[in-house]
Image (cartoon, rainbow, N blue to C red):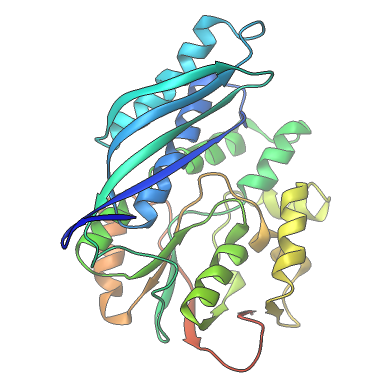
Length: 299
């Protein structure tokens, strides 16, 4: 975040990754959605975007490359953001994403450091995309599950802008590569609070996700996330092993995790409904920090 004036600041972010679906247009959509997400997570409004692309031109046709760019441009247009250029290089494997600039009021921005005891945790997308991506690679996922996962990954986190501009939330993050527990742990550490999560309230993209966890259809990144999360998370005796893995699942273009004051909860839920958010699940709450080094309790 770069402050321009007392009431205006720039939010700048950059992200890109390799393909996680076979369809080049959908790949472009997901990568662009993921890149735009950091701006929304800070409560910003995206204004410009630039393509970042690396392609093996000997393996990908110009038509395929254009489809990736069209997918990205489609989401940038949906975000009412201007595509202002970009850069492409040759590379042994495809990479695509965006560099995005947004605007935010310095006193209305959301961050990892603003959580307070008594606030409610609200999650705006179901989780499980990392497990599903592994299931796709193993040929286990049905077309219905794949479509559900793509919808989650390609849905813009636009509610973040409206929530921040109305001053309804000060602490938020998007849930991506470090999983729900990793990103929540960062909020707790930065804000010097602890959190309690009700695992039964966490939404899942598809019921098959839990079955695949039982069958060890789990990406390496998710397993690594869980190892780290176990150093700052206490799991109640009744929490099933599958939910431990799910809460650590590495997400691509996941939803917003919002720390909402109870007085603002109804307004936040109304905004999520107005924006057709995929979830408005209340999954836990923020508590005052104590002497325990474990920042999260999962029940």
